[in-house]
Length: 148
Image (cartoon, rainbow, N blue to C red; front, side):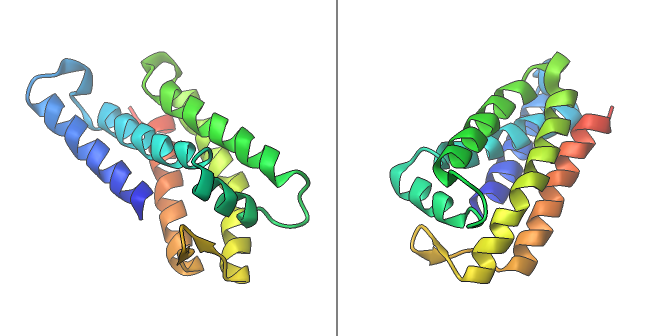
């Protein structure tokens, strides 16, 4: 739920700043970029926090090689994506890339839910809820990529 909270808090804070006169944040598009960037800072840093990292490595489907390397690569891509979203000239392509990344990583969430894994000592988000969240996150990235 932390990624959803980060997305919403980032969006609302940026949109509020825009309404209060910060020209760079005046509009839904830049506010969405900030919200999604905050989401990816939260999720990307989790790839390197010791306890979270172990949980994320365990989530990688067993058929894939080097789950530790995959978690590192996806964490770096998420953090780089967060930065890219904040650069207006790069934001659209970055958002499209992040949408593809989220699609590519979704099987790990499916695998974790089916295997009944825990994340931070708590069961992973049930698959139905996780699917809805993933659709929201991907739709946000696509709105940034294709929006005005």
